[in-house]
Image (cartoon, rainbow, N blue to C red; front, side):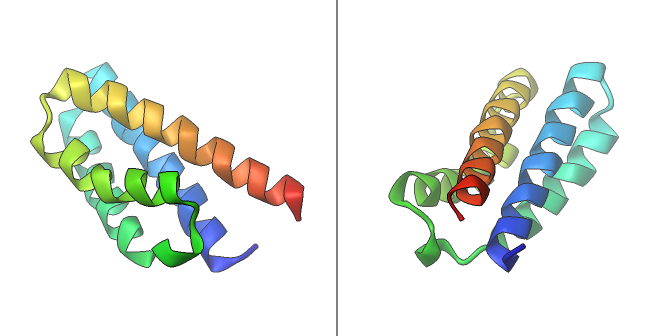
Length: 94
């Protein structure tokens, strides 16, 4: 598995954990995985991504920091699914 693909898959899981943590009321867990997700975005080679994925990755900091908790949970779950679908599609095409 390519480094970018691995980082994206890990990012998707971190975002899913943020959403689940916020949904269950565990803000401590959600904050921890939000920090991990923000670190993962730094590991990704954005130039190798398609434009819509570059936009999503660049918007994640705003989503994880500036949004209210309910909105963050929804956005984190949505972006998690989009990134996961992208990773699966990339793996199938190889």
